[in-house]
Amino acid sequence: MTRTQEALLPATRRALLHRIAVAQAEGRAPSLVAAVVRDGQAVWHGARTSVDGHGPDETVQYRIGSITKTFTAVLVMRLRDGGVLDLGDPLEKHLPGTGAGESTIAELLAHTAGLAAESPAPWWERTPGSLRPALSDVLGEQPLLHPVGRRHHYSNPGYTVLGALVEELRGAPWEEVLRAEILEPLGLHRTSTQPEHPHAGGWAVHPWADAMLPEPTEDLGRMAPAGQLWSTTGDLARFAAFLARGDERVLSAESVREMRTPAAPAEAADVVDGDTYGLGMQIQCRDGRLLVGHSGSLPGFLANLTISVEDDVAAVVLANCTSGPLLGAVGADLVRIVAEAEPRIPEPWRPLREVDPAVLGLVGQWYWGTHAFGLRATADGLLALAPLAGGGRKARFRANGDGTWTGLEGYYAGELLRPERRPDGSVSHLDLGSFVFTRQPYDPEAPVPGGVDPEGWRGIG
Image 1 (cartoon, rainbow, N blue to C red):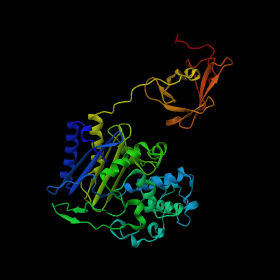
Image 2: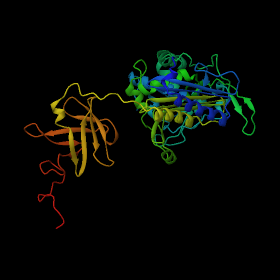
Image 3: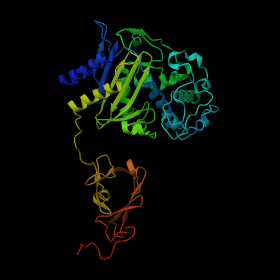
Image 4: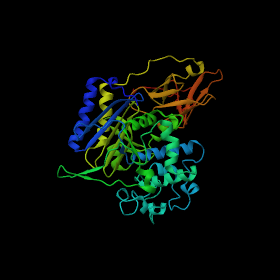
């Protein structure tokens, strides 16, 4: 990957370096590496290490733990986009006999399938995968701990099941499918299931002494789709750009946007913390900024990938210690530093290429009862509805080609916006999911539900 360090201002680069230096020193990490992506390109790489004269670069592998789950989720979404499965399909339809077959594919992706967080003992992250050769060994005798679809409960076995689903439907090992369908198309040549030189060693740092203990490196076997991968800041920077923009060779922009959309019912504590989950991606709100991505950990390693799609900035942070620096906070700070110091420059305003008189007849001010809204035609061919004052429901609408429009987000997602016309062709009112929007508050000429008092507006006296 070509790095354009000069693309960031010197003060921004120093602030980024300071942040990872504090994280490595206070978190007592043997080494910590990071990268920042802006406009789809890596623009900064930094490293801090306890070894004099050596600084890991963007080609050094670290184990990335549960970021692996996002790769597995992409493979499942590819099966959906190819028509091989539907996200609403029960698992039993494609992979019978697991004991968790009533769970849907979407529920497995969103960790709402009711499965346990971990496989039966011994601790799978620190023991050979050969101890769990079959799905039954991963799921245990009672796979379901919670009602299916009712709550978000993070499940490592759930992603093992999704990996097995990929193998069943592709007729090839998960690792081979991963390489053919994601790693090779995106050029992630330093991402692998086994460590490849150069790579970092994993360490445990004593909590009460500045001493270290090497951690074992286990092949996770069946659990690989939940956390096996090794990667680099260079490769994960490319992967972050893909998750923000899509790539038709792998997944469309629309499909990766779907992955970034909340899909799990949040628990009360998650609502307070501003955290939820999509389809293979973590979603959080930090300092008013919506962040998506995933964290990861395995004995000896910590990893984090954080993206602000609105700012078009992403960060990757990797460390080779079992615990210590809070990489989620570091990643969020790296994104914030760049986004605040060098805000995204918007694209130039450009007028519509063509003006449709029928659309012009829809735009302007509308009233739902006494609530004032503005409807605007945007350069991307959509209609945008928003309240003119205070908070309220807003949404964009896509034309259906028959004069109607479909809502794309929020309360009006999927709802139909239908302009109702008078005999002369002029627009009388808008019907939006049964709500009547009129040009004047409670227009007596429009079919306002419940009717309008014939005496009209009046004062107190």
